[in-house]
Image 1 (spheres, rainbow, N blue to C red):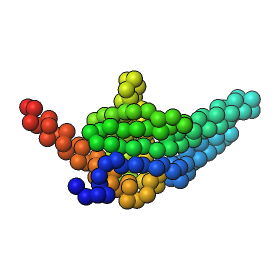
Image 2: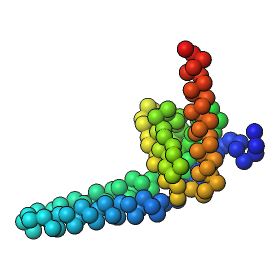
Image 3: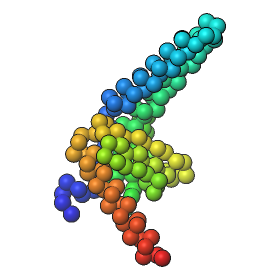
Image 4: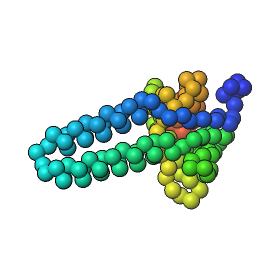
Length: 148
């Protein structure tokens, strides 16, 4: 195996500009809809306050993970909120040219999701992640066909 594809694969995550812009747009549209609605001003204030609270929670959740490390045999370390957790990647994970959704099962049995847009990683690291996920999916398909 080539050296650059060897384990471990370290994913140093940075905030996603695209996802942040999308969150701003969605919450701005929701706030505009509330303010344009023909409802009492006190109800509008409550709804706008809830939108702001939800927006802040979404921003915190999106930037929760600082680093992910993929070792051999589907063994991962997830660094979030100053702590790390060991986990395994589940088959429910998804990847496309601009988006990767990683679904993990931790040692305690908890399911953890990580949404990675194309701009949270260096382009080369993002490509290497997608290649490794494709290889893992092919291995799973081959194992399933051999079991049948």
